[in-house]
Length: 96
Image 1 (spheres, helix red, strand yellow):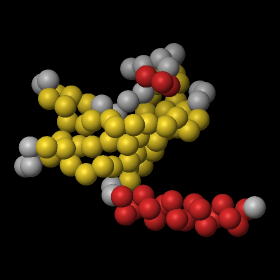
Image 2 (tube, one colour):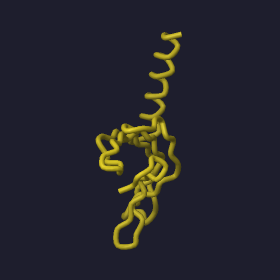
Image 3 (cartoon, rainbow, N blue to C red):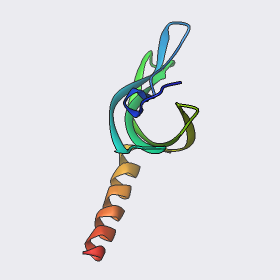
Image 4 (cartoon, helix red, strand yellow):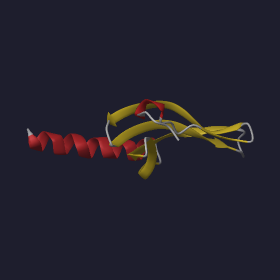
């Protein structure tokens, strides 16, 4: 558990082996409820290397001084990310 939003990560290791490698993150909102966008890669055991770049939007709630994951949405491919970006850009044009 972490006590600041800046410490939040998707890095994950098991038995000394990195299984999820965080490449970057953007803090979208801070506070009692925080939202973070992560760029990461999963370890692919078959290939013996990290797989394609993936993205995850995660919401955290600060309880008892520590952040707890409350929800997450994984964007499974660059193609899916581009579709989300396109939809958001289109919608934003409509709001101006």
